Amino acid sequence: TVHCTVRRQGLPPFFPAHAKLTTDAAMWARPLLRRSFPPRRSLSFSSDPFPRLLSSSSSPPASSPPEDPFCVAIIGSGPSGFYTAKYILQSLSPQKFGPSAPRVEVDIIERLPHPFGLVRYGIAPDHQDAKNVEEEFRRVMDSHPEHDPHGSAAYFGNVRVGRDVSLADLTDLYSAVVLATGAADADRALGVDGEGLDGVVSARRFVGWYNGHPEHVGTAAVARALGNGAGRAHAVVVGNGNVALDCARILSKGGSGLAGTDVTAAAGDVLGGGVGTVTVAGRRGHGQGAFTIKELREMTKLDKDGYGMQFVVRDGELDLGATPATAEEMKSANGGRPKTRIEKLLRSVASDGGDGDGDDGGTRRLHLRFLLSPVRFLPASDDPSRVGSVVFERTALSGPAGSQRATGTGELIEIPADLVVIS
Amino acid sequence: MSLHLLAHRCLNKIAPAPTAGSTALFVRHSLLPVAVPHRTGSTTLFLRQSLSHAASPHRSNFSAIRSLHSTAPLNHGPPPPPDAPTIPLTFIYAERPGKPATTVVVDAAVGTSLLSVAHTHDLALEGACEGVCACSTCHVILPQDVYDDLPEPSEDEEDMMDQAVGLTPTSRLGCQCTVAEDWAGIELEVPSATRNFYVDGHVPKPH
Image (cartoon, rainbow over all chains, first blue to last red; front, top):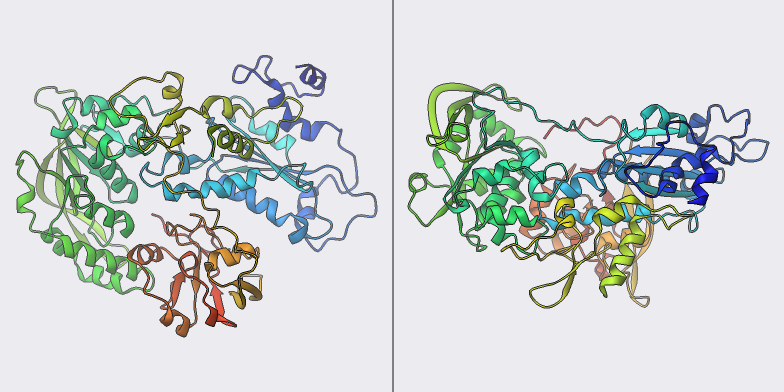
């Protein structure tokens, strides 16, 4: 646009000659314009505005107040990024900061086109309530120079720092740069034989697959693993956190159970009516599991809620985990209450597990198992490139309350698996 | 609400109003409002779609029914009616490092939840899930007699309170407690931290 051409003269050299990611180059120019036009004044205190602006006790300077706004670039638009934006705007607003409050401009930069990070791509599709926090984030975006001359926020999606704009340039252009990018976008290996077999996927990729994350939505491994019909397949989820329970629940509900949610259509098709057998296995006991009771309770009610999945937890494994140290953990302040309630819930639904091991045709089962650590992934008999089962070693707990460790006992248990999700 | 109006509101809320030709890029790629008739006949907004799917919509056996929210976006509940009776309530904010305890007295509308009282009066009480009992950030501590008079918390509320920081025997979630007429003059305490927002020096436990 003409507007953009005029401004180009003031732009630093890193500005791409062609904007291959956006057809609207003026959108690019916006963060740069904040800082380069009008040109900075050389006021005596402008060389180090950061500490002065954050000190609410400083008196306004004798000369005219600075016109340079306090600009912050926040890299990452998940909850961390948006809460940072919210609280920067709030604490530097005239109500909180005082009459010498600077003008604040916050630019939120996100690698993906869609904002909100894990709120969008991590929360399970059947847990829409937790996504309500997006309303809070949208209210942050409501602050606009026209309505609120003191503070405004802007969002830039599909911008990768390091490729489209460099960190060095951001630190030049902004008063402050906040890194709110989250954990590394990579998987930690278990270090177990057979981890590379087809059908062994990380929960990060599996969750991204069913949530439509642009980088994981094409994960074909799940479709290959469940290709012969989800209803006859066996899935194993390694881990005992809320993500593990989420994965198990999505596998259990299947596409039919997730109708009306924002699960991707492709995932719904692959999951069909739900996977036949799902086993969630954690290496420590039920008292050490990182899951919370809300997600656990939901799992125990899958059958009653009409998803056709029976929940199985073994009394024997609850007993194995009930060490004296675990009993002590259940009595600790604040941490004790959640664990005690989880124990009570599990005991109320536990069985000897005997009816759960056979394949009796119709019934689909979800097993929540404890004190099992994977030692090997074995290939399928009909296709050695795909996983066929997981060999677990029974573990025993030892150590003081609060830091019990799982040590192998040598007893091995093999569980069939067409799909393994490492969580 | 008409589809176009809803899309317009969403687009305006997320992207800054266009200034001199700038446009938020992500709008073009991921917010493709496509109306898909819902099973029951009402129209829902087809927003949360993967990029690849949005680029090449395909037919499948899985019916493409989507909704933006399965619960209506609440914004902490509607504002109280202007003629509702009010009673004075005292909110005590616990001391934090570098900040003394503060006390605020507000006129709370009877029949509204404690969370909406806090938000109507711009008090610092987080309600991350917008008051649908899906988080623990509106945790408040009530006086013993008020706590005893309230009906028992639901199983859902008890489950969410397991996650609250600094839980006490008289703790409740603010979004689940409705202001009653005989609460005039009571003092509630707001703990210094929530699961979302720690105070300086707190070391969060890994999960």
